[in-house]
Length: 240
Image (tube, rainbow, N blue to C red; front, side, top):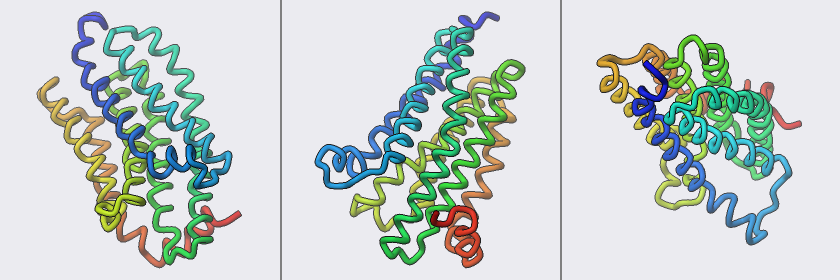
């Protein structure tokens, strides 16, 4: 069967990519766009570079899923080289940004400055692991590649959406982990439902990703607030 013939099955990934990108773009009006325009907050160069790289990833992901949905697989693979380079740059940028965020929380006198750091490092590690696996399977197991990249990107979408909890009064009391999962889990459910509709079963890649994420979701709140994490985090990402 040709790539063009099976293209309609890939529309799920393009449609969800557009939704993911919209969530990311709409997550920063109060914490980035407005302060940047009004000059009410000073941002380090790192903030801008980090933001550019992560926004670029979302744009690239939408483009890549669109190319795949149209059956333009050869061009999709060529552009994928740029994605590989970008993903490699995002990992140190994400780490440095997590470090900077912890420094800012310490300077502000936050009582638990490393609470958010657990989520920063977990999301970044998951993104890196899933993308490495996705790249390894890009030619041999396309369906694995699509799903691993989907979940890797989702690991960036959920933390972006939590920016609303920082400024929106109705969401501020909601724990960071719970809000993140309210964003992430519907996409995982949608992927599982897509699997059932497209193939009549849950794809092994979907099962593996859920098996990885679920224990982390269950334990995240306890770990992020634990004394041992508060003691370990400064060693991993402490102030420069």
